[in-house]
Length: 378
Image (cartoon, rainbow, N blue to C red; front, side, top):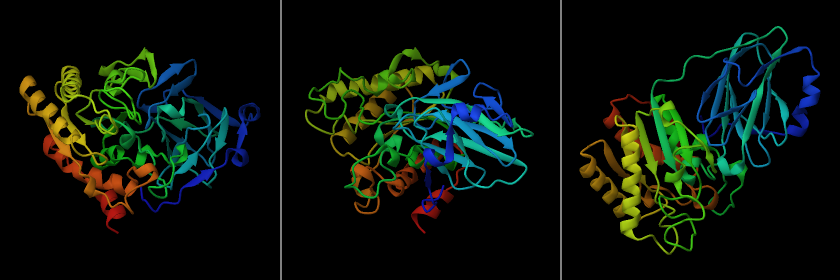
């Protein structure tokens, strides 16, 4: 993904038609979302022939033939999706209603690869993917398998890609400026050619959420409680953690705990952090874990997170948990910030560049820095 890519937000009102109109088109083949030609990366919930999801970064992939492509999806007012076909620049899809969106660019005959990525987080609403249309004589087929490498990211707004496409730090956040694919997390996954799951929600902490008047948040559950949620914000649907066994886990939490007063008591924060790491190690004993702090916080978050790591390493008798601190000064306050003082794509690239070598040392995986070099230093 190049920072200079031209991103076109395509208006549903001009390029798509409503479902009842599309359904009447008998000259198309329709593949429902539950067909095994689709491969999903991320947590999804099948209901009938529709697949629902709301975590950021959930990805639908398939291969298709022909010159026509229609996507039947509903996202509501605040959800946005990146649509990738082959190596073309992404199209940004905003499907407010139950809509069939037709790919606007001219396609050649032959086989193409489709990828639909939910670029916004759970608070922006639930995506309802129903399926894909192609020409009457064309077909979908199952794509190549996903990478065997797997990374789990647990985080907050930074991991969600909040405001990565904002023009500057003074711009107020809008859902259209959130693009999780420009977060450090997918950047890292692409560098290692790995799958990723993003379990992330803006404003949440380990024990205290942004702006809470109490030292421990109780009204809105912080991130550790959501680890087993199939759908963010819904505690009634549980996800079997063994369905996705990561090789590595990157936890970037703590910024919101220490964002505003009153800060949580150090002991409570450390106990909650150790509990999270113990849970992760029990569930995924072979996984390497990196606890990241920054780049939107400083002390006392750095010191407290380091204590979580040090005490967890001792208690669990492991060297597979490490601390990585990303200082505030890594980011240029003019060029590296997007909406509401959050890292822009450029700022996220810098954070990824700090974490990637540590993961390489822990996992022994080779990586590519092409995306970072092309977009950060050119």
